[in-house]
Image (tube, rainbow, N blue to C red):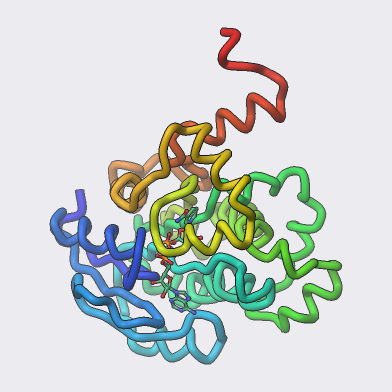
Length: 266
Ligand SMILES: NC(=O)c1ccc[n+]([C@@H]2O[C@H](COP(=O)([O-])OP(=O)(O)OC[C@H]3O[C@@H](n4cnc5c(N)ncnc54)[C@H](O)[C@@H]3O)[C@@H](O)[C@H]2O)c1
């Protein structure tokens, strides 16, 4: 599915990004990885870069090739360093990078955004999400937070709510849709990677353990990587603006509570 394709993958030094890069290469793709940290094991070529600032993103964009097939936005942080930095990496920086390379994606290419079950609340918080997604470019994030009364503790879920909303908007924007470029999201549940320990301190052990018990086990990076690569491949050519839950059934289980149906009762 990926032979001869060039994939740009962020977050390749660890967890889901590292496994996605490794699997992409075994499936015949060329990989250009980006991360703020040097990967221990190299998978394809590597660009060191900080995706949390407009300057860092500009430096990365300057070193990317003029044409590639897909951008896989996997880099992310847990929220432990506060909402401003979290929104910068997980949403505004991600969007800025994507908008800046849109013209380099080949016709029929793809953008895959790794979001999260943590962004489940985007519909319930739609007004705030709409306002914050409506702020263009790479903004003064402290200012955006103040304008929208964003508490520091909600940086992670909020960043993923914005990402899920923007994915659907971008899928229909001319710079993507006009050139047949699909924009989709994949939302993992809890996955055993270094970030999971941080989620325990940010979201609390109770929330993480409850999510894991709903699905029977935590996921692994190998559960997520093939789904991300499928979404980047031509096999997903009729999927656009979608969010694929890759969470062992967690979203369905939460829906049962929120929408008031119980799968146990048939
Ligand atoms: N692990 C989970 O439980 C889980 C659940 C849902 C969603 N996710 C999402 O999956 C994605 C990957 O997470 P993971 O589990 O592999 O975590 P991870 O911590 O193993 O990997 C994240 C990678 O992003 C990189 N990164 C962080 N800040 C960066 C920056 N400023 N510039 C460039 N790179 C940067 C890190 O160096 C790291 O290599 C994230 O977007 C995360 O929100 C993870």
